[in-house]
Length: 153
Image 1: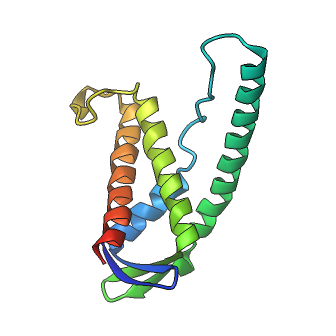
Image 2: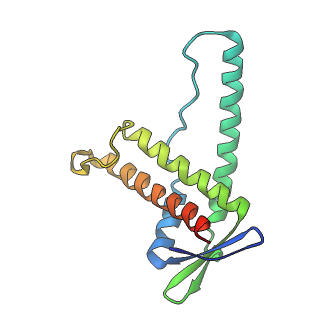
């Protein structure tokens, strides 16, 4: 994966066919799990109201991201380029994609039991949790590349 072009708030990334398919399949998984709700440790009416408002706001934002996720992986976003694909997004769409990838990574980590060491021995994971490990690693890898490739230019 490499940044092919960046101009006027638009990014074009050159992806291999495998990277394009992986990105599409990963973003299709959003949301990975039920988002963890924010919870106060102490009972307090004012804090409870703020907690409720925060959770409602987070749910609305996540719903908006879910709608954007489908748009971000439309086939026409991935133009054939040699043996790979050219993936184009605006700066705003790129930010939404980074939020989606981060949510996938964090929720997958949470569903794995919030391990301290993410470089775990995957052979010890139950089969049904292995997918979350793959999601977590793949989302983190895409996040890293989308962020560092922008800084490289």
